[in-house]
Length: 190
View 1 (cartoon, one colour):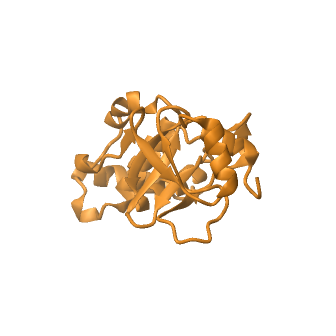
View 2: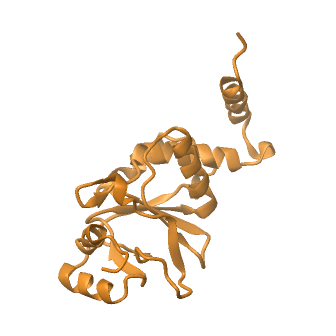
C-alpha cells in the first residue's frame, strides 16, 4: 500500500463486514474516506470540534494518550475514537463530570452506528473529513493504535467546557472552583 500503514488499514478493515474487500478497495484509493461501523474495533465520542481540540491540548498537558480523532470539515463536530464498549458505560462516565450545560454533553456511539473517517494517506481531493489527530503507528499495540482513554477524555472534555464558558455564565460554585484552580496552577513561592 503506497504510503499507508498496512497494519492500521487491517485494523480499520476488521470493523467492516468484508475486511479483505475493504483492504483491496483501500489499496486502490488509500486517500479516500471510509465509512466504518462503530462498536467493533472502536466506539466514537462526538462533541463540538473546539471542545475536542481543547480537551486534546489538556490531555497532552497531563501527558495522557491522545488517540485518533476526526474533524468533519463541513460541520462543527469532531469524533474521538475510544475503545469498543465505551458507549455502554458513557452515561455513567459523564454523570460524574461537572457539565455546566447538560444539553452540551458529548455523546458516545457504539454498535449499530457508523462514522466516516479519512484515508490514512493525505487526500488530494476536497473531502468533508480529515484527521484532527491521525492514528500513530509508533504508539500501537500490535496492529491497533492506542485509543484515547474514556475516563481521561471525559475529565478533559469537562475541563475544556468549563474553560470555554464565559465567567458571567458560571455558577457561584463554579467560579469558586475556578479561583481554587487558578491558585493551584500559580507558581509557588518558596
